[in-house]
Image 1 (tube, rainbow, N blue to C red):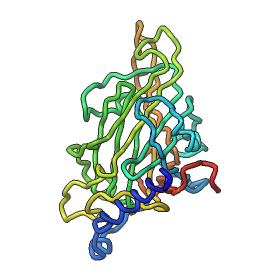
Image 2: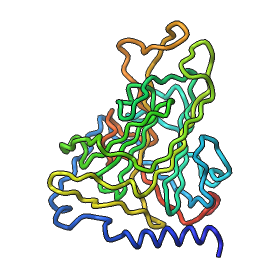
Image 3: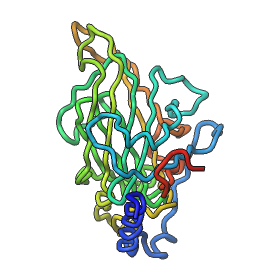
Length: 293
């Protein structure tokens, strides 16, 4: 039996064992009213879709782009959060994804001439630095979802929302992405304005077991973690928060009065990442190569 076949059967077996906790009751689903997106302009295109290949063997989570990643395509370049009719991002950002029976794998490549990060404590508000963010709604119902932010120092801010903010959801900063592996690779020197940097890379392995909702008033719809079955689609989006910097001695400071830029994989059409209706779709492919039709 091939390695790919064993990995696929492992994923299917684990999914079958856990499938009983995949979704909530019909009653809870019926009584939930989804918040509708309020874009400021009509969407020019539908959400992006990505086909994540089965990774066998999986990538080493060390910040390097090893051969395992050859099986995955790069995503579209990130665009402004309000869509391509707004400002074009100053730097390029793109991602790859893959999966196996254990983890969701993410590789992000961020061009950056000025590597900068200041926050070092877990669950500080990492988007006050330049950061890379992941948003994941496993069952795609626009209800419970997870957010992970990381800066160039590797500082993590992770949280869980039982509902979007617009549906009166309260972010739970007590949730932790247990078992997550994250590696940062810098192509340049951090916090040094005397040279020109090239960028940074984020590599993640997110175990399926970490997608377990916290207890929430009134119950929760997605009761516990379930890995995907081959062919499943999850709603996922990525964001890059970027501040305009100015040189200050040999370091940097934010330009006063300048709001951050928000660059995303698939547009939100409004400056708000917490509209899962507009996130992209990731399909978990049973094939191990990107060349399959």
